[in-house]
Length: 96
Ligand SMILES: [Zn+2]
Image (cartoon, rainbow, N blue to C red):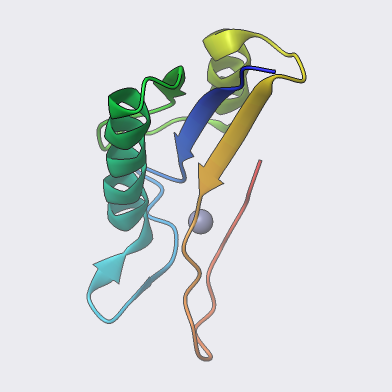
């Protein structure tokens, strides 16, 4: 089966995700996601990305974008990038 990949950079815009040591999760998620997107494209693997900028996306909109990318079938792999904060810091976190 030829798989298609959807990359989701977690959080974004008004939703920074976890933070610590001067790192904001939404920014690191975006860097990782953009790198993955470019790399899959270089390899000729069908890939789409949910956000490529620092953009606020509601959970509903995020799901819509995932489903719009290649439809909902079992040859689609969705990678949702998140980075957890370590230690005792509390962080709000959701993963679709
Ligand atoms: Zn997160």
